[in-house]
Length: 211
Image (cartoon, rainbow, N blue to C red; front, side):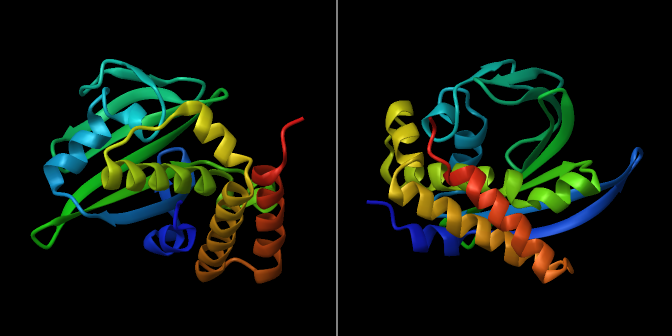
């Protein structure tokens, strides 16, 4: 059984902004320390044979300048790569382009930290409706998958993963994640009532039972 509370509390979440050439962008950041070394964590995050074991099946040319595609999800171009420390890529989905930046760093002698920043131009209307949890809850699921894989060595079973998402346990995880993103938004200066309303809508979206 997954220790949901432990996993939720193991992740650091922040909300911020960054000025790009095209204007101001929203930035959400997730970070977690794992019981492995930098080389292994880097390989788990960049090896096309290992990525599906904790995230999604992936295809493409995973090198600087190459393109990638996650099955049923985003794709993009790898714009920067500095093994085993960091990479950056576009994140293209639904006709929109955003960016991810991933950093892997050592924590002491026997642990390593994974940090992901997702940078996106999000209009005020959509941000007001769902807040950072719109994508943050999804990234929390990725952090959970990586934690389980590194701890057990066992890969994801796609069918079991889908069933877990709609189970009571999965819904509780997504609810707690959404609440944490609400708190991160408030800590970043968002109005408490507005952040709470956005989180409630995000929670409803992530915990709805498919028809």
